[in-house]
Image (cartoon, rainbow, N blue to C red; front, side, top):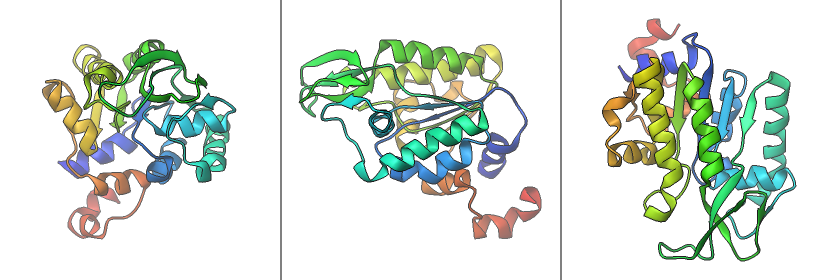
Length: 228
């Protein structure tokens, strides 16, 4: 069941194909993004990894988490998206905090103009609206990674908005949706939406390797005929 649904998520011909990728680091998702960009119509990037892209694009991101060694890779991925005609969306605004703490002071600011001393910990209301609008049009949706520090209520609204949009697209529009990755799965469970999506992957790191396009020897041995 896991293999069939992940295979369909990558290869079943349903359009528009919307992928939502979040989490902390571009380095953790680099191969995933490379394999998704040629396949998807829309790639929505959230979580802390978005700030590496925003800084690579010339934005000011304050104290947000940025992988300085991956700025060139982020620029390369953005160029790759243009080449393939893939719409790569970054959050227009962010919920910024003055410290990495649950009770930090917060303000909503443009994601490319975060003040010094502040850090983006969630996507903002405009980004939530834009992401939800794109997700609503999807006929195939793949989501891996939260939009912010959803474990803290002040920074959970972005992840909740994405979860609700994926669930609504699935239930009301008949979209085929796959949610995977420990944090994303925890979020849809926490928000009571697990039964509202098509499939929840429990493959963890193996799911990411599958999306990267790697051949998994055990799966090849057991169900090779399905994948060939």
